[in-house]
Length: 226
Ligand SMILES: NC(=O)c1ccc[n+]([C@@H]2O[C@H](COP(=O)([O-])OP(=O)(O)OC[C@H]3O[C@@H](n4cnc5c(N)ncnc54)[C@H](OP(=O)(O)O)[C@@H]3O)[C@@H](O)[C@H]2O)c1
Image (cartoon, rainbow, N blue to C red):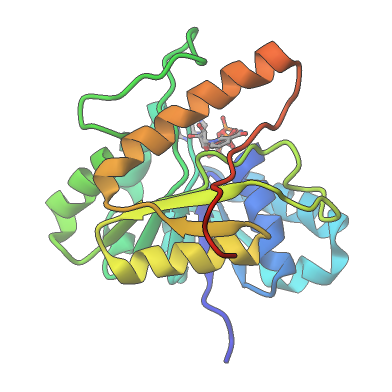
């Protein structure tokens, strides 16, 4: 059976484009979304040059068109852009799984945990989308602790885990499968309310990167079979 199409909203950025490359390499049709279709096409060309075999799986579109054409939507924009971006794509999220990669950071203190008023970026996304769609959308948080640093190096063997939080089991299963497709071990980490801790841990990892002079620290959960 063919794999479901993924739209990466903000897929022109380091995190979204890196994940997109890995999903395309795993055989998923992937649409890069951007505020500019031309910018999305440029990212498709960049990724296709890195992995020519994945070129047929990649397309570039404006964010609402990308969201409309996909079964699963990955939100990978800065926290400051999340609200406006969701306004643009809300209707296109109806009946779909929306995976938030967004980390709320409060510059300049990006290595200090900061929680937004709605609890977490993902909870705020769920509240905003449910105001339009009711329960006809599944918001999941995942990949927050995965640094963009190594994503485009397909020879890199990831040793870090993806904690997946959400209130809908099916949506979480989708994210766990996409974690695996990208080369990571995905773990159900409970309800979407727990995403505040997962998002916050990224600020801690940024501080660890600075203090240890590394670029892509991550987390691994021990004590479970894999
Ligand atoms: N970088 C990492 O290592 C990393 C790791 C884990 C999680 N994250 C999180 O993942 C998300 C994406 O990270 P990133 O590093 O890829 O971010 P980014 O490069 O700063 O932004 C990603 C894309 O978002 C769009 N965007 C930027 N500013 C915008 C605005 N004001 N309004 C609307 N769209 C805007 C841009 O796409 P267009 O200009 O094409 O529209 C941009 O290419 C962030 O929330 C980040 O905290 C990042």
